[in-house]
Image 1 (cartoon, rainbow, N blue to C red):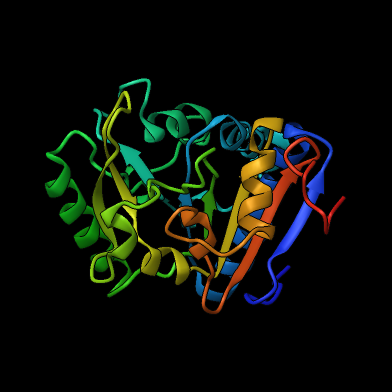
Image 2: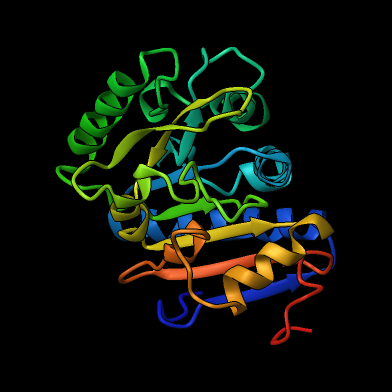
Length: 250
């Protein structure tokens, strides 16, 4: 379950439902292991359709009863700067699909406060992470997606957020986006994780996935290339449509 950080594991599955199911399996297995070893499981969630489907599977009676939810702590990899009840909120998606169905306790939910002024929200989350982890965060599991431009979390190509090294969370401005301000974990926070799992589905991601995994190294243009846990696992769960241009996994 823990491949070398130097050798990312790429798992090609039949479709989005299989990707979501495998993502839920990774969550459940790593939660049991972390709780057994450290009495706590800290996971950073992401937004999107496939993660939401995975959350719904985790909340299903078949799976939910196998996880010690009071020992699970929920964080987020990024968030749009909107109130928590806004339809664009990553927290809001997770709340409806997972947190409410499992009746997660408030003390276990550590959301990014997108309703704050962006820079204040970033400082707030950096402080929250420091209090919880006693320093820089070490997540047991981080879920990430891959944007068509090569971004991940809210680390966008050629943005100032790519160079941040001192804070765990910063405000990121995305010009032209419907919600231009985001909060995002930084590379130091993401790459300290014990496991990072990318979820990538759909033919519209096939070109960028090929460029990230098999193309020339250009992390300024393809920020996802700089995700490399220093001591953890890096797993790409992709469906066949997204993997169509991969040579090593054809």
